[in-house]
Length: 313
Length: 266
Image (cartoon, rainbow over all chains, first blue to last red; front, side, top):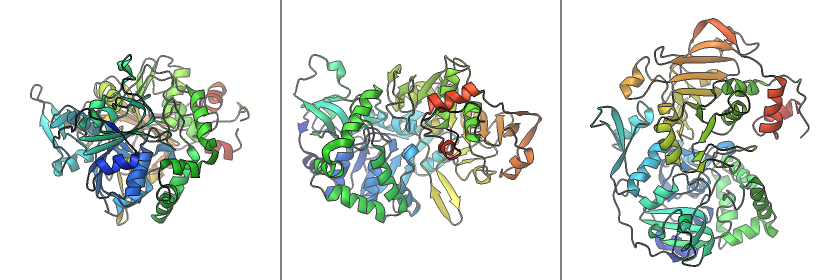
C-alpha cells in the first residue's frame, strides 16, 4: 500500500503534453492512491475526473485536504473504496451527499484528519520523510482512531518532553490538479491560493496537470519565479480550457453556482440522481469539450463567469 | 436591492454577528470561515477594530474582502491580501505557530465542556456523517480564544459530544494541559444566550442573554445544565448604522440571511 511508503519520482522531468484520455489511461491505475487538487469550489480538476469516470477506473483510495465535487463524482460512479481527508463538503453548497451516503453505509472506508495534519502528511512525502510531527489532534476522537489504526503515534518532543503527534507521510500514486498555465516541459503556474497542492504534487509518483493554457517550452525562461511547481514533478500536461468548470479558476473565471447547485440537488435525493447526472454530463460525451458545448451552448455562462472574475480582480 | 430601513430591529442571526464581532479586539489576528463568522470579522474591522487582521485557512493572508464570499477559496475572499499562500502557511505558519488570537468555529454539537463535533452524529441505530474537521481541530488546538456562533437547539448541546472533532476543555480542568494543549477560552453565542468558560472552570456558564430571552428558555433548549453567572448581562443590540453596514455593505444580497427577504426587511 502506498500510503506512508516512499516512492521515487519517475521519470524525473520528462513531462509530456497529451490528451486527458491518454494521460488518465497512462497514469491512473485501478486501486491507485489518487490525490485530488483544488478546494471546495476553486480549481477542482473536473476535466480529469470526468475522464476517470469515463474510463471507469475503480477501487481508488482518494486523498486530499478538502475533498469536494470531484470526489463526490467518483463516489457516485462507484469508483472509490477509501478516502483520507481533512473534510468533505462544499460549504454554502452543502455536504458531499454521495460520499456521506457511502460512508454511512460502510461502502467506503474513511480516515479523518485535520487540514493541517493532512497537509503535513503531504509535506513529509514531499521531503522524503516518513512522518511529520504536528501539535494538532491532541485529545480528539480523530487522534484516538488514528492511533488505533496505527496511522498516528503520540510521542514526546525529545527536547522539551511535550506531547507531539506523528502522522505518516502521504505519497499518492498519482495526483490530478488543474492550474492556470504550464509550459510544454510541465512547469506549472497557479494563480491564487494553492491549498495543499504544491506539497501533494511533490509527494506524488505521477502527476497529471490540466491547464487553461499550454505555453511553449522555455516560456518562463525570462521569469522563472512565475513557476509555482517545477516540471520535475509532472508526468503529463493536458491543455483543457475551462477544465475546472463549474468550479472557479482565480484570474480566469468565477464558479458557476447553478451548475454546482444542480449537481447538489441531484446528489441529495439519493444514489440514482448523481448517477443520472454523470450519465448525462460525463459519460454521454466523448470529452470535456463536448460536455461544455452541450451544457453551455454558445458559451454564454462561461463568458459571464469570465467577465465576473475580471470585475472582482 | 432596496436600501434597508435602518429602523428595523436586528434579526436573531444578525445579533450573533454583532456579538461575535465584539469578541475581536483591535489588532487581533482572527481566523474565520465564510458565513456569519466572516461577517463578524468584517463588522469588527469596520467598527471598533480597524487594525484586526483576517486569516483564511485556504492560504489567504489578511484580505480586504468584497461581498459576498460563499467559500474560503472564493475570489471575493482573495481580494487584495498580504499574500495568497497555502493551507500549510495559514494553519501551520500562523495557527499552529501561535500567531492567531481568536478562531471562529461552527459545529453540529457543542457539549457542556465546550468540545465540538463536526464529524459523526449518533442517530437512533445509525450514524450521520458530517463534513469532518477541515481546519477546525487545528484552530481549537492552537488559538487562545474560540468563538462559536450557532442556533440554540437542544440536540446541538448534549452533555457530551458523540465524537470530539475539536477540543474544548476535554474532560474538564487541566485536561488540555495533560493532552499537551495550551489553555483556551471559549465563548458560545446563540440566538438565546452567551455561554463562556475557560480551562480553570472546565465547563460553560451562561453569562448573558439575548434581548427577550430567559434563563428558563435557555435551559429548556440545552441538553446539559450550564451554570448561570451571578450577574447576567443582556447582549447589546446594534445601532441602526451598524445594522445598515451589515445589510447594505457586507452582505447586500442577503446571501447569509434568507430570512431577511422572507420577513420583508429589505
